[in-house]
Image (cartoon, rainbow, N blue to C red):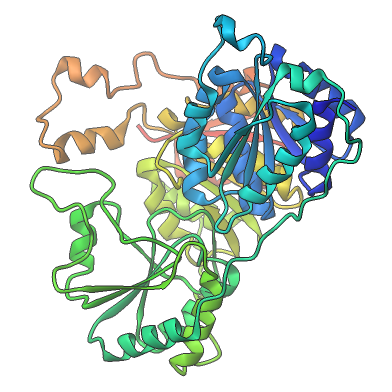
Length: 515
C-alpha cells in the first residue's frame, strides 16, 4: 500500500464517501487508488471551482465531509472562490492537493507554488504529508479538523513521492467522523433570558449554526413570546416552507438593515457574529447595530446554537408549539416573466423536500419571498458572496440526497463562472433543474455603481456591466454539455416547463428571459 492508498483508505474509514476531482500528473497515484478503494466515489469535474463548490453542497446536505482532489497550487487557486464560500458556511471538507515530489520542489518547475500559503486563508487546517509514513495520520487529522466545531475546510498537501512510496504501517486509522459542538452554559442562557425580558425591543440574530430544524423550531417558540427573530442574510442551509418557522432576514443593503432595526435596544447573537455591511460606502456605517443597542452573545461559533435556543425557549417559558408558516401555493402566473412570477411557479411545483441552491443575485429575494409558504424544503445560500456557486452546490446536494429534487437558481453572469458543472450533472445523471435568469447584465453592479457614488455609467463603464453583446445562448450551451434545455420568455411557458422538468428524471436547464 502506498501513501495515496493510505490517505484514501483513511478517508473511507472516516465515512468520507465522495471525492470531487480535477486531477493532473501529480495526482495520478490518487487516481489509481480509487480502483482499490470502492468506498469512495470519484466524481470528475471540468473545473476546480466546480469541485470545491460541489464538496460544499454535499457537506451542507450530508452533514459530513466530502473530499476534493486538486492539481497543485494552480488547481487550488481555481477552486478558491468556492472554498471561500464553504469557509463562510462552516462546511466540513477535506482538500487533497497534489504537489511535486519533495526533492523536485527545489528546482522551481513551472507548476511549483507555495500551496500552503494559498490554502491557509480558507482552511482551518493545512499540513503537508512529506513522508509516506505520516500520510494516513495526517489524513485522519484533516478529517477531524474539518468536522470542527464549527467545521471548515482542511487541506492536506500530498507530494508525489509520498503518494507513490510504500508505507510502513498497513493499517490506516479510522478517525471519528463528527465532533459535537460544546454545550452552552446554563448561566449564559439565564443571562440572555433576563436581558430579553428587560429589553423594550429585542431581537435574536441567528447564523448558519442555529438554523437547523431543531434550532428554528426553538426560535419559533421564542418568537411566540414577542421576541423578533432575524437570520443572517446568507445562510448555509435553512429549512423552510409550510409548517416551519419563518424568521425575518437581515436586509442586504446596510441602510435598509439599519432602518429595519431602528429602535432595537438588544441584539442577541446565536451562532453568528455582530452583523456588518457587505461593503463600505461613502458616509455609511459598517457595523449594522443601531445606536444605543446592546449586543450579547448566547452561543459562540464552537457552541451548540440549536441546543442553546431550546434552553432559552424553556427559560423564557415559551409555548411548546412554535409559530409556523401557513401553506400558500400560488395560482398559475400569467403575463410577463419576472422574478415574482418565477417564484410563484417554483412555489407551485417544488415538491416536498426539494433543495434550492440560490445564486440568483438580483432575482433571488423575490423568489425567496414568494416561496415562504411552499411545501417544506431546504434553501442553500451564497454564504461568502463569491458568485458562481449554485451549479456546483447543486451537484453536491444531488449526490448527497439523490432522492430529492434540486433546483439551481442562477444569474446569467454567475452561471458563466462555473457553467462546466452542467457536464458533471449530465455525466452523473443528477436530478437537478437549473434555472438561468437571463437579464444579460451584471445588474447588481449597476445598482452598486450608484450606491458607491461612482456616477452614471458611460459607454466604457457600461461595457464592464453589460452581458448582451454577444448574448449567451443558454439553451445551446446546456445542450453542448449534454443537458436538455428550453428557453421561456413568458410566465405561462415557464410554469409549464418547470412542471415538466420537476416531474422528469435527470438534469434539465430552463433559460428564463428577463430582458
